[in-house]
Amino acid sequence: MKKSIGPQAIIQPNPVLIIGSYDQNGRPNIMAVAWGGICCSKPPCATISLRQATYTYGNIQHNKAFTINIPSASFVKEADYVGIYSGKNEDKFKALGLTPVKSDVVNAPYVKEFPVVLECGVLKVVEIGLHTQFIGEIKDIKADESILDENGLPDIEKVKPFIYDSAGPGYYALGDFLGKPYSVGRKK
Amino acid sequence: MKKSIGPQAIIQPNPVLIIGSYDQNGRPNIMAVAWGGICCSKPPCATISLRQATYTYGNIQHNKAFTINIPSASFVKEADYVGIYSGKNEDKFKALGLTPVKSDVVNAPYVKEFPVVLECGVLKVVEIGLHTQFIGEIKDIKADESILDENGLPDIEKVKPFIYDSAGPGYYALGDFLGKPYSVGRKK
Image (cartoon, rainbow over all chains, first blue to last red):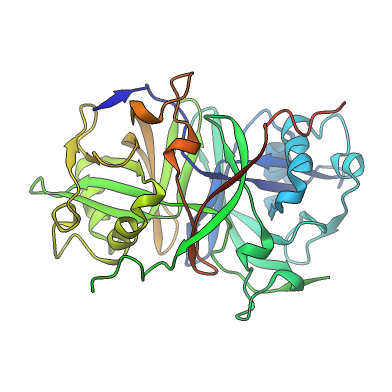
C-alpha cells in the first residue's frame, strides 16, 4: 500500500549540471542546476529550468546561449558553491580558481577543468511557473581526450558525474555497473 | 585541451523513469524514458520526452495524463524490457508479472512494485523535433512507506534508483554519499 506524500518537485536521481553564461558586460558566470537533461535527439537538444531571479536567467535571455558543463565528483564542493552564491555579487570562476573558455560555437563560456561540456543555442523558452525552461540545441560537445572511450564518446566511469537528491538532500557518486541497455531485459 | 565530438544527445547521468499510461481501450502500458526530470517547483512539474512513434505518445495525447514510476535497481531487467518492446504488441504488465494500479488523481496507471510514483496531468506539450516534450503537473506522489525517511520523503538509499548512460551504454547503481548540498561548498 502506497502512501500519498503530496505534490512535490521530487525525482530520483537528478544530474548535477553547471551552466555557463556571459552577462551583459561579457563577464563569465556559472551556476548549478539539477533540473535538466536531454529532451530531443534530432536536433540534439537539452533542457534546463531556471528561476527568473537567477543571474543566469538574464544572461541567457541576453545571449540566447549557454553551456552545460558536467563536473566530476572531485568537484562536488565547487558545484555546490555555484549553486549557493549568485554571480550578481562575485566572479565565481575567480572565487573558485576555475578557468572560463569562450565557446567557439555559441556566445557562452565553459569550464576548462570539467571533463565534458555541451554548447547550446537557445531554441525555445517555455514559461511554466516559478521556473522557466530553456531548450538549447546542442551545437557541439567538447570533452577531455583523457575521458573518451574507444568509440570517442565520454566514458562515464572516467567522467565520474554525480547525482543530486533534493529529497534527502545529498550528493551521490556513480555506483556499480548493473548491465547493458537493450540487452539485460531482452526476451530469451 | 578539449576535443570536439560533435552535436549529440549526451548528458551524464540520466535517470531511468517508467511511464505509465492507458490506451484508448483502457489497457495499461509502461515504457522506459531516460530523457526527463523535474522542470518546475511551483507548480511542481516534471517533463518527459517521447517520439511520436511510441504507443505511450498516443496514450498521453488521449488521456492528458501519465505516471512517472521510479524503479529500484532490482528491477533493471524489467525497466530494460519496457524500453525495448512496444505496448502496441503486448501487455507489458502481464508479460513481466507487474501490477497496474489506477491512480486516484489522474487517468493513468502506476506500477505497484516500484517504490515511488509521480502522478501527472499534462500541462503543456512542446514540439521540439523527433521528440515531443510532455510537461506534467505533479498532482500527487505516492511512495511505499518502507522507503520513507524520518521527514516522510523518499530515502534515496532505500529507493535505490539507477542511472542510464546513453554514451556507454550502461545502467549504473547509486554510489557513495559525497556530501550535503548547500553545505559542502559553503564559504567558511
